[in-house]
Image 1 (spheres, helix red, strand yellow):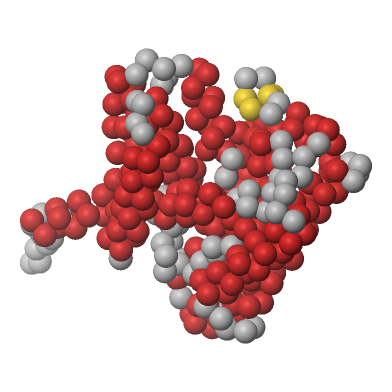
Image 2 (cartoon, rainbow, N blue to C red):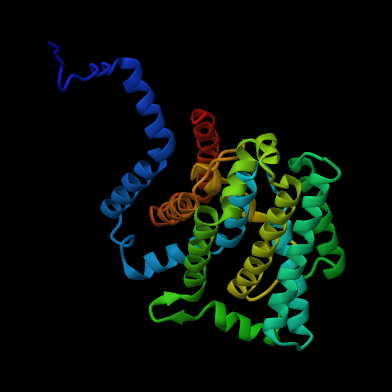
Length: 329
């Protein structure tokens, strides 16, 4: 006669202090900035009645959308395991190139295409320096940043490009579709498409694989160098398009127009969880982090904080962002 024990299960492993600590670290590293964002919004809502007004919220999302396109490109580059710091200078040069076409009397669409084309060329050049010349991406793009700034200053003689020829672009960028500013609508579309590409296509999967382990990706048949070249060119194209959005926003262009983009873009990408070592990142978190940073600046202004103190806060946020990236490892 045989007997069987029915319904027996392995005893559950006790949840130790170390397990709780690991879970806490994982939660803080992935969602800590979102919790702080929510707390910051509640604080502002209670501190100033102007924060939650429709006009201020529209201003906030419009501000967050200004650098949406280079932020998406920077997210792709970081996920694939590289770092591009030339996009600020590229914003300036691509904007100058597109504006030169407009001020010469050509159609705004052609100006936008020229700006995107400049972005693709610069992005491809960055990719070649990284994949063919084997120069570390931070060094290659640092050099490219200096070159682009110099070209922009030489071609413009340090002056700005403006005039009535830019009016169609300005009207487009400063226009609305219903209650939604056009740059915000374009940013939403861009983020959705970027999410689809990263999560739902083989290209996106290859980007994550190459960033996580380039050697393993190569052994599975992925041409890692070509993939990185395409990612750099894609980031350049997005930055080129974003340059014309920025030109339309300020109604002029100059070689140094994108100088201030480096901090908010990289901080948003890193704070959103895109790893400096590659292979990890969520495009939706870049969007949330961009809104968070815009709300920091917006809230400090509403609270009457001195602009010098704002720089201190922004620098501290960058340090926290990098610290969280190290915390995730």
